[in-house]
Image 1 (tube, helix red, strand yellow):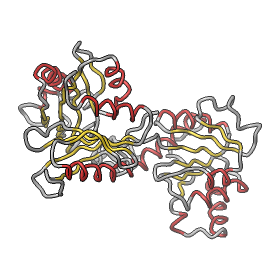
Image 2 (spheres, one colour; image 1 turned 90 degrees about the vertical axis):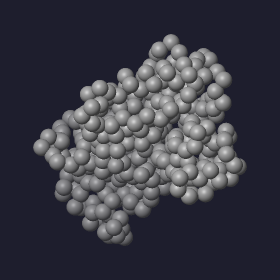
Image 3 (cartoon, helix red, strand yellow; image 1 turned 180 degrees about the vertical axis):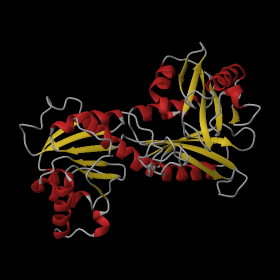
Image 4 (tube, helix red, strand yellow; image 1 turned 120 degrees about the vertical axis):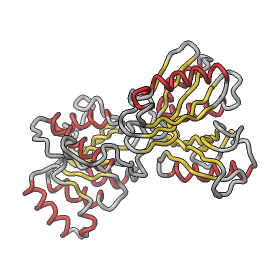
Length: 381
């Protein structure tokens, strides 16, 4: 539900009652992953999505019923000859959805409000909710913050809350959303409770090195993908806010010096568009030795070969060089800055999601793969 934090937070502030259906688990081909949500208020207004249109109508009705009777329910939607066309789930997948009423007297309302506030403020926090277990536990919620403190409760022994907080913290550390099983006494014995943990973390960084014409288009693509985008160039005449109005930051500094002193993590994307050895080599020598999800560099194949030779001379190992994606981008036949930015963005997505970059037409592989464990990330500015 944190993926619609902005709208739900506004509903909370307005005192609205609503019910929210959240994807708990998926199997086979399904368009949305765990944490995706659809909410319906008492006036019948709907926001969000749980399936890209497949089962929205059925979940809408479940939300309306939950608002009426105050009961949290879990429902499974799957493909069969009998029900596929009834709900529109004809893609062969299975979706488990939990529907929770959030009324004025709901015991979880305040902890959910705190979770929505944290997500909206861009704070690192995890919301753990019981999605299966004994009667009376379903829908109970615990908010866990980055420092390990927590509020709310799952309705059981204190050890359960401590164990849940520890598990949620582990997922939060990697920005993941997923499920974990614990028992009512807080252990990991089977047959207890299953928790859905939704992580909300600041948006991942994209740092674009080189204030060239291609960079402006890539900034727009990066923002579209949800990144916090920085442009860095050593030349003050080119690295200006006027040239990159959509960037979150424009930095005038030598690229390798800036990278050495700034924050990066395992979700960061580093795009080197300078294709000039005096900038590229010291910059990539830093980039390929630090945490980052993606390191790519622009240039011709001849430039790439020369750059690789220089990097080897600088002491980089074959393993470190294997991380470099160069020439950057997928082969789309791109010519314009916008087309080139699209090809780079496509490679970033393919690298994150495990895609092949090949056309889906004529392919035999599943369209919706299991996501990389670090990918199910919710971020809010």
